[in-house]
Image 1 (spheres, rainbow, N blue to C red):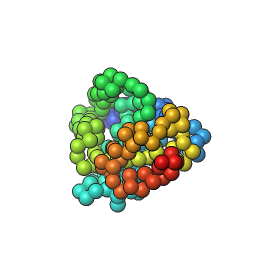
Image 2 (spheres, rainbow, N blue to C red):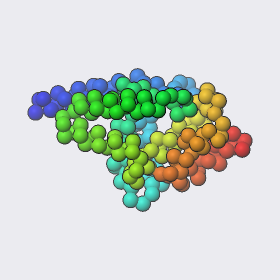
Image 3 (cartoon, rainbow, N blue to C red):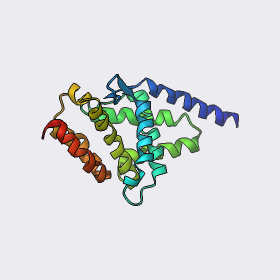
Image 4 (cartoon, one colour):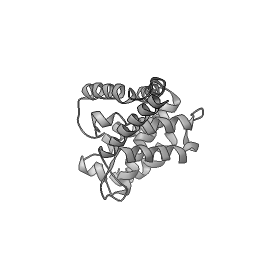
Length: 191
């Protein structure tokens, strides 16, 4: 049992590094950027609290598990701000390599299970993944609104860009959440 526990603890120690990956989105009070570990915890909490907003057939426990692990690859690949410019293919390659390395730290059975869950989130095809991905896109606008613009101001984002980069993704898996936040975003941008 010791080798299994050794591997599990190596993974958990590595996961701690996610706390050092800063994101572009500020905390709600605007005091500083959130880090990726805080983001992962916060959207897992979003899933727990907003479970009643999930489309029929969504397994909220699977969604929470997806959200807890979805950004672990940023330990190696870093965070790519949604409004920034980056090479999507290079980022995807870096994230795939990171997933192989990080989930490979676990015992084979656990690593394969978590990797499959991460792959499902990335594919954004299942109802669980669509809702999880929508929550991943829903949380930052809420924080930007609370912080008086946050990364929207930093990246000179307009309403149309926001809709294209996050609005459509929120609406795809959580239409009720987009219906709730869109009027607030429109009011912020005066459109």
